Amino acid sequence: MDSVDVAVVGYGPVGMVTAALLGAAGHRVVVLERYAGLYNLPRAAIFDDETMRTFARVGIAEELLPKIHVQRNYEWRNAAGELLIEHDFAASGRSGWAEWYMMYQPELESALDERVRAAGVDVRFESPVTALTEHADHVELLTGGRRPGSVRARWVVACDGGNSFVRSALGRTMDDYGFSEPWMVCDFRFRDPAHPPAVPTARQVGDPAGPTSIISLGPAHHRFSYMLDSVEDFEVERDPGKVWARTRRWLSPDDAELIRVATYTFRSLVTDRWRVGRTLLAGDAAHQMPPFLGQGMCSGVRDAQNIAFKLDAVLRGRLGDEVLDTYQQEREPHVRAVIEKGIELGRQQTVRDPERAAERDRVLLARRAADQHPEKIAFPGLVDGLLAAASGDGRGALMAQGWVDDGTRRDRLDQVVGPGAHLLLDASRVTLDDDLVALLADAGVRVVPLHDSGAAGAAELDPGHVVDADGTHLAWLAARGVAAAAVRPDFYVFGTAADPAATDALARELAAALGAPALVTR
Ligand SMILES: Cc1cc2nc3c(=O)[nH]c(=O)nc-3n(C[C@H](O)[C@H](O)[C@H](O)COP(=O)(O)OP(=O)(O)OC[C@H]3O[C@@H](n4cnc5c(N)ncnc54)[C@H](O)[C@@H]3O)c2cc1C
Image (cartoon, rainbow, N blue to C red):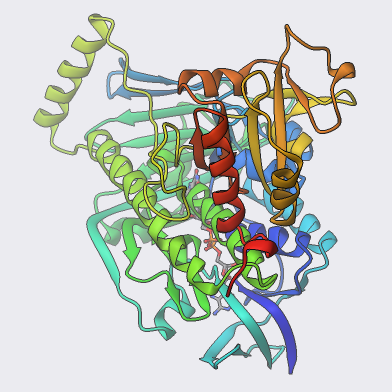
């Protein structure tokens, strides 16, 4: 029987990111996937700047850029075509990448697959997991299909999607928000992507007779989605002739090829326990949501980041496995906030009663006339979990990312500091003694003193110091009245400190939380 550190069940985007991160960290990882190869059909379309930050960490951001589309707005219109709401998205958001990207998922998966293999992960297709048994120090997984066999894994990350076999085998239940809508999703490939037809790239049409969504899937593909009256309509409406009749206003067979029609009942579900012994559930196996905010896959990518750095510390013997209990503690409130926001927006967009839709339109048009802009869509930070004890301003927030210069190159912070946790310091206010720097290094934490671009040239700096080239990080610290921020490998802020004494204490606390060998007393 093969023995590995981690078995990842399922090779969708969440399994791929999990495998890429853990493989790159040097662990023995096997992926068990039921299909014979990459799925090769689009599901997710939109991803955000935080997700792009993870894709950059995995090493695929530059490769993706020419294949994806940066979307700067998201319009809601009524049946008459009047603009009800327009959400704006920045070309560079808090995470240092564009706030909304539109993609063709097979291109993402091909890029991820390459990174997974480059990280030395053993990817096994045609290997559906059919049973798993937990033992004291490992889990035994049985695979069926054309490659029957068994694998012995110290840890299992189940990324096997909405109908997760692993979740059922563990006897888990789902909390159902009661949201259930039948939709038909129609995907097209442009015949001449260099001259695409004039089609809206992110539009929601709140027509009570048939709510519709039109979105770009990157430069060469497009998606039209239609809410249907009932699941009974699925079979009839999938007919290609009927699909072309629906899209006629925007697209004809001369412009595009219809590549896929899929029907879904969009639901919102959260699994009760995301960790059972040596198995962690991630992505759609742990939670599902309607795609109105484009956050299902993005949420799963956050799960992968959260799991990867904690499992890495456990596998290295730096931390006990209790740290894995903070995974659900941290991620579930975040996922629920995203789901609840998605349902709120979805219910507004898909009103089927004409009178209620007319009333909604009146309210939203009046707001626009009064120049009231919609609230920016934002998600919460972490509240409880692997965080500093003191609730300093910024603790639990997603750390902003800008550009820095270390004297050899100017790049985004994540690219310059590399994977792992880091302690950002306002170099004009705090320094750290060498013994603390060494203690942090043992826990895999890099100390990054930041200098104001007006005060220092990068060439004059000590090794490891950087110029805060666009001012993002020093501004973030100053806005919170702090001099230091400890940032976890998943980009969330462990804690902040306002003065030198508090910074020393924060450094020690971070080293202990990440299992610096000198502090491990277990
Ligand atoms: C129409 C639509 C639009 C969407 N749009 C967006 C969007 O714009 N943005 C966004 O972020 N999200 C979006 N989502 C959600 C997103 O697609 C999912 O959240 C995401 O695919 C979940 O990824 P996953 O890896 O967890 O699961 P999946 O992608 O479902 O992958 C699960 C994998 O596990 C494999 N598997 C299953 N059972 C077994 C087994 N027993 N053994 C081995 N392998 C197994 C499957 O074959 C599959 O490859 C959308 C979803 C839909 C349906």
